[in-house]
Image (tube, rainbow, N blue to C red; front, top):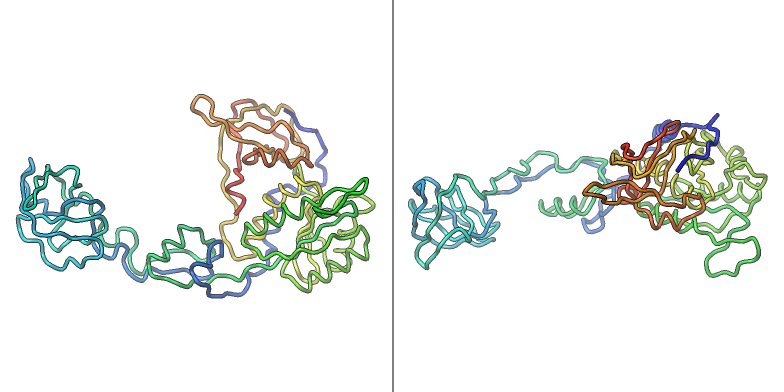
Length: 410
């Protein structure tokens, strides 16, 4: 495979563009308290501190028998049983010297016990248990070994994933302070566009970007409002952008930002606000633009479906997450062997739709055969992006950056 050799003169490098957008990200929205069950995907507005030790007491990591390790000889031995402790029991009675107790996973260790032996290593009767040699502290979860009271459980600016909700629930926290969802107005530009379900006249196509981009935005936790398709007219573009800017925190458009005579969005932005950035050294997605309308940020994505998808995930995503108060906004790529060659350098950074293949026990990055910027089928069949730096070549087997979709969508 090789690049197209397209000139990159005057194009903003991708990293510079992302850093510029991040510097110009607006302040995070207002803070609101929400129920824990409604907090998935929201951005934490204040740090959460552990209200108590986790675990709150020494407890058993196994079903088995609790004892003092010092009560057994080096070879093990037999100890009489002094009771039974299940999860939820109080275990306030001190373990008598020279005894063991039946214990279950999660149950508190009785005072005096310091070791647990799994039941499959023991031979028990109703009154006693034969135990192997043990090491002190085995299979015991110590109080505070995960988190101590007063330590930070979750940092502000963290997007709440399912495991974070579980951790908060384990501390009895039922409400969390999060930033209000960023409210985004989504607009599509193009006289050729029709909505699914409508008949197509010659030269018309269905509006794929509305659904692709809405899916991307909602996966980031944004509240999205969809507008009707913009006509390719300057006055219509200006009126629609002005209305959307008065109603929403941020605007995202697709199409209308290239160099064609019917691409009016850039001029409408100049008349209503400011155009800060246009055209990136990226393929696909060169016509991306960024500016503001009535003080509201605007991101103009390309009209080609894959170009819109790529730039939404690579460039717009970090900005949108930062605008929601999120701090970690860019996933680290994987470095894996390339199952292809890129012999001719390209003036733009390439984002190839690719998948991973396991060959001989090693994962290789293999691009899809079709890389056209209008071909969404390959984006569905791929699992991520292979990233080739501008002005770079690649031999088969060289390490290449790979960004899985699973790290970008959400």
